[in-house]
Image (cartoon, rainbow, N blue to C red; front, top):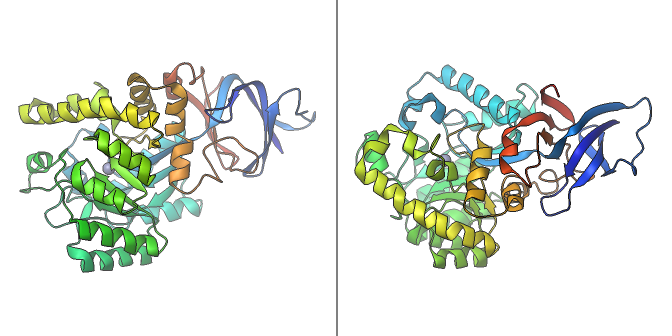
Length: 403
Ligand SMILES: [Zn+2]
C-alpha cells in the first residue's frame, strides 16, 4: 500500500476540496480517500509527498490525432507525406508529452490506417508508457468529403456498413464519421475552403444507417460535425459524440439537451488562443478564412456557454495539438464559465463519454489510481493545469518533477 499526501485534494470538481488529504493506492487502484486525520499512515509505509500541491484526477483528452502535431508547423496534409517510421516516432513523442502534461486517457480520431490500434495495443501490453487509447481505426468520409488524409472514403449506406463492419473487425472502439464539410480540389487551400462550414457531407439516410449499424454492434459513434442539418441528423439518430459544433445555434443547444449527445472538442484554443490558434497559422493571411473563423468564433462564444448552462456535457480536447489541454480549459473559463465546469470538461465528462466513468475521471475508492499533482488550485486559477508536476497512471508514477 502506498499513501499519497496532498496539500489539497479535488476528488470531484463539484465536491468541496479537502485540505491536507491522503489517498491510499492499492496496486493500480485507489483505496480510502480522506483527510489526514482520518487515514492513519503506518510508520513504514511508502509515502508520495505532494503536500505542497493540489492533487486531482488525471485528465481525459477525447479527441487527438496521434501522429499529427501543429507544433511541427506544417499543414495537416503534409503529416501524411513523411515516412511511416517518422510518423510512429512522432506519435510516441506526442503521447509522451500528453502523458507528462497530465493526460492518461485519450481517444484517437483519425490517422494512418491501423496506427491507432497498434499504439493502443502496444500501450496495453506495456511496451510504451503513454495514455490509454481508444481507437477509431479508420475515420470515414464520403469521396467528396473533407480531410482526405485522415479519413477514408465510404459512399452510400451499403459501403458505410461494410467499412464500419471492417473497422469493428479490426478492433475499432469507436466509429468516426465526417458528416459535415466537403472539398473541391486537392490542395490545402481547397481543404480549408471546405472547412468550418455547415455543409452536409453525408445524407440523412447515410448518417442514420451508419449510426444504427455501429451501435447495433456495440460500437459508439463520433462525428466531425461543425453545424447545420447533418449535425442535427446525427443527434436525432442518437449519436454519442459530436465533434466541434462550432456553428452552434440555439436550436442545436436544445437538441444536444434532448438527445444527450456530448459536445466534444470545440477546439477552443484554435479560436481563442492567439499563441497556438488559427491566428498563428499562415492561412490567417487569407481574408476569406479569417471571416469564416470569425463567424464560428462568435457562435461558439455565444452558444457554448449557453449549452453548458443548459446541462450539455462538453469535453475539451486538443485535436491536432498535444500537451496543451490547459489552454482549452483556460479558453473555456475565458468564455465566462466556472473553473469547476472546466475541470469537468477535462476529466469526468470525457470519462463518461468514453464509457470509463467507473474507472477514471475522479478520485474515488475502487477507480484506477490515475492522478496528477499541480502547483496552485485549478478551481481558483485554471492555468494551474499547465503546471503538472506529477502524473500517476494505474498506481505508477510516470512523470515527476522535484518539489
Ligand atoms: Zn480532429
